[in-house]
Length: 614
Image (cartoon, rainbow, N blue to C red):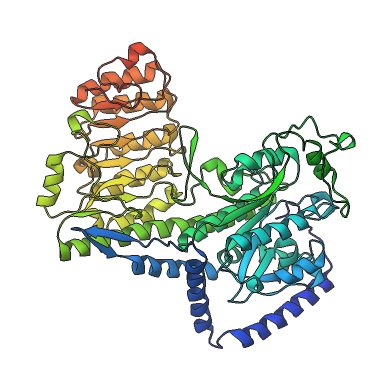
């Protein structure tokens, strides 16, 4: 997506294109879709869902829970939620989705513009490849360089992608590319297209990003694990937005996150050896193409380590950060605060407002789906318990964790323990499930806590949840206040709360937490474990926590307080250590803070390496 949008345009040209596309849309609709509007929407929703299953890897894992050794399939429940979310997404479309047939794209010889009239309306049979890229000549208002390098990369990249996904008929392959697919000559139509990005991403099977052919980008491409690692792409807000929308919505739609990049990858590229006038004689540059300077620069270093080569690479998003290290996997679309689209670079701050609005819309859909999914699994587990018995455990691919691992008693808590054997038996004796409401890394904000409250208040959840995992999210002080005053007191079986890696928490969040314990509603809380690691707390937060531990009679059940990796110094940890001794068996976990050996040896302070002291 271009960072610089032209505010002026040929209104007549724009109107002509609009009329042509409207006529084409009507003709395509008459030809391919039912006349009834509601039937059309329903058919589109179902087609999108089927397409997601078809495009995904063949070894599709269905959601299951295990009840007394028998697997209970809850895939239909999750499918129904997904379809409902898709219907919400489709309502955001304000401009038709225009695509280019692959065969037509290959005959053009250049990156086409919307005014060339080479696009058509998307069809239900299309396999859409969404081209996400940074414009290489933004000042000139063109996405490609003067040599057509990006156009060539896209052609070769698509060919490689279709070889990898051999089940797709190439005649059904179409491309969505902003310069061609979004109106460029009419500001109003352009903005309507931008506002419809959410729908365009939802209707796409793949994303393909061409990597700029220059040494720095080529070196970064080799080690890139997510789209954000790509040079001249990952730092840009518009590029981040396209990534964000695709990855979030494809998780909601239960599709594999098929995000590819294609380009030159060269591990030993030396940026100092990029003078195109002294290229290595072994450089193999086609005589039929006039290469750009950056392509020549790559050829100059061909002799080092075997030279550059073009590759197609599947990129997966960061699955959350813990202690500064990214965990990469296919668990879902995890974004830290500084990785969000609205935190990226823009040419105009006006663009940031548009980006933030789309980001918030997508995030709301994503968070609500995550919360409703967890509630649905609780409901299914409760029904299964009623039919099959009390024991509920997890299938290897379910996002819900049942019966947390029992490794230790609360008298000597380890980082993985959550309950004692006696408590586990107590849950069973009371006919309750022992389950985790897991929203780790689901981008939950303070404003989402009210919606979360409605899910947690339901009967099957509030009496059965024993662990609430809100780690790796975006919850701040107001969210903590709502959580402790209006949510947690109603969870009668809750014994662990995980708020780790919520960087918006900070000092104000701790103040809100401590203040909430003055409210009478929190007197019934039975929390035994409270995790607050990686929350940017510092010594002032430690002082507030220490004062609460010493002076308050609330939460006397607490046995483990985790404040690791919070930039606490000796003074703060010392205050917490002294306060913990007034709480009997309370243990502190302070790993990752800048404290001396003397303080670390204090009674009640956890040992380095993650083990907690007796």
